[in-house]
Length: 620
Image 1 (cartoon, helix red, strand yellow):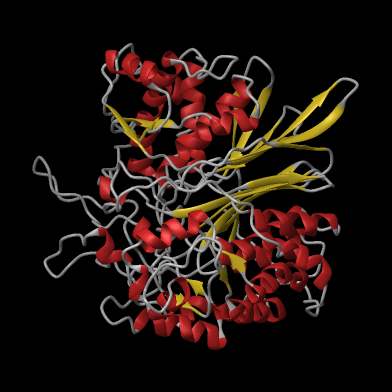
Image 2 (cartoon, helix red, strand yellow):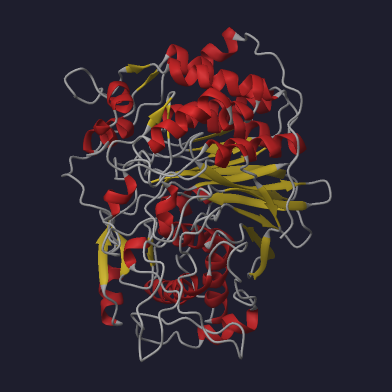
């Protein structure tokens, strides 16, 4: 993999555009009130990473020149304003991320990491920008083991300094801006700085999540910010100001990533991590100072459909997202290319059966082989067409229930690296898709891992708990007289934990952009993205219709169907085929943009936002 890191461009002086920015700071779009639900149990395979907060009707959008789809209206408006000023898709993504740090703190922020896919119409090139967090240099494979050598319980690992990885999103965005930015770096921070200073209204979703979280109050800074003096969560509509974050963003606007990765802010981050009263970590100022983003070769695979031939481009390892999505799509193709939905948008049981079987096969390979490629030799051939045709032969009339990993490299023994279910990711994550007026596009998935991360607030932002994306158990037990084998995704110094994030760009056979899409949702991201790609590219549905349909999938366990949706007919058909079916919350956050063209109408952009969150898609 090649590595590049560009120096940041000269920073502009923070200027006042109060009339424009005041419009951006206007009140949030009102969401439907969340349905009443009981307290959440600890993360489990059957639970979504972020709790449901009801559905918001989404109509989708059309535009001719530029479009933004993010998980929060403030972020979408800020990004669109940047595009209107002549900014690039990368510029708009930076502005959106800074606003999301404020308005969607449970999901992402400058204390976390991100993967960014970038498309340029000049040369029709795709880049994969890796801003994933890394393990501190002092971390060992025993990081999440107790004194007896047993894996810690999930929240015993998450809450506190132990789980905090070196954040990477700001430094990655800085490097991407050096290559693709058009507006001054400092300009991109102004919407978030103004909004943090003037305040924004607590949304129904944020209120719901701070109400049910059992750990956020343990951190004094977080408790003082998210709750009143009686410890009650701020109500919907409360004007929430964050002057500490405004100051932090102002420093980053002036000094670039150095303001976060060195000096007083870095010192405070390390102090919070190392001096946590019950669960300290090993992050150091040196770890922060020496973090580097990586530009990787995008993983692009073909997808022939009855309508056209496409190339699906996504993030390679340390993400398992693009590999698993490509495997699911390839197995669907090899297994007869069934429809997931008919022309009216009714989900088809035959397609659901094949899709969930493909998911089982993909997750078996994912757990066996995929980890940070700088530390683990990820086998070649996982997405080869011949290998996927071979895997597809295992899809029969009845469910296989549990798949085993294949052998993409003949003659090479399969690595015993399967992870226990407790290590399926539980990230709080967000996604944004942006297309600018010049045809550049960004698909970025950004995260702090669990909802509200490590529950550590420093200078107005939350720190990630990304290290819990590593396997807690570094080695598998000895079997059949064989010694224990190392888990590919075990903790190692400076290593990036495996991810399921799958920011995706779709190109047509001429290399032109056709689609930008992605989603939060932990390990379920893979199914969310794969099913949306198939529904739009193969089945011909509109992007908003595809996003709004019920979620479904399998992570090599039960067949999961979204609860609260009319899927009784499909459920009975799957049960008849031997599936173990679970109805669970599947809180995706899909944000997608599709480029459409027609004779005598020209080309336009069509966008969709997930009704399960508070997203907004807008454009000109």
